[in-house]
Length: 377
Image (cartoon, rainbow, N blue to C red; front, side, top):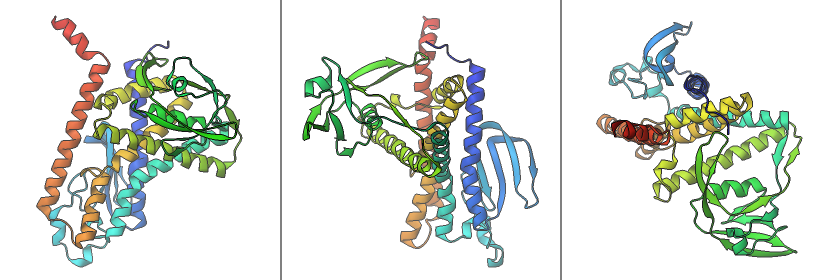
């Protein structure tokens, strides 16, 4: 078992990752805004008091703030970091409105907002493609090489040599697809279509919930079928094929994240399974301790998560802005100022409540409450 990386190392790795992803995400908003000639007041890394910064020739204030967890692009006319419109700009004459975000056509505002999450996906695709061009694309044929005695697969009649073609309606192209579907499940029965001796068979099996430890001793609870895969094949690929694989793998991760979120919302999976900032920082430090490649690969995964989360239709997030724009398109006019303020306040309350719960779970997972109980006892 590998030793846990130190607090300072984990914190530094987490801040470094956040710094890169904030520049990427907010850079998407910034570049899209520039594309439509939108005036920008500030590009900030972090929140709170400005530590230092500079102003470029176009009047954009580039600044580093005291709290290095996040960042924002503030377009001229924004009232705050959440891009709420300052009511005062509504009094401006038409001649002064051309470069202001609030007065851009609806479709341009939507593109500017969506560009942040989308560039997170593009960033991950490029990282994965870079790995595949350099190291080759790893894949494993969806063949069962062994079946564990007494396992769910054995009970269902799965045999070595079976080729898995489908699970619960999802097409299986490689064994990695099987792993993604099963591990992201909640232990409910799965229906597997396999090919055996030229015939197609349908098998239903109930995965067994097991606990495993990773190299750092972190305990994970997940479903297991009890099958082994064959030898992995590393395929040399060119840039275009690497990009295609990057798009496919990023799409698979997005689907897995969406499935997990649906399970939490429907009560099929505990909220305890989701990690907050403390657990994310811990995992970031662990991946960084394994080497630069592991750290960059985790950054790609986290970038996909960041893009997905920002598209959730909660006011304060990019998805919430897009939801309000969709309502505006249907109504052919924006919602009232008070309604928008209520929506943003509700979204802020929802996000803060979720962060409190996740942080509480994180503290529990690292043993803080157990230690505190021991001290008090």
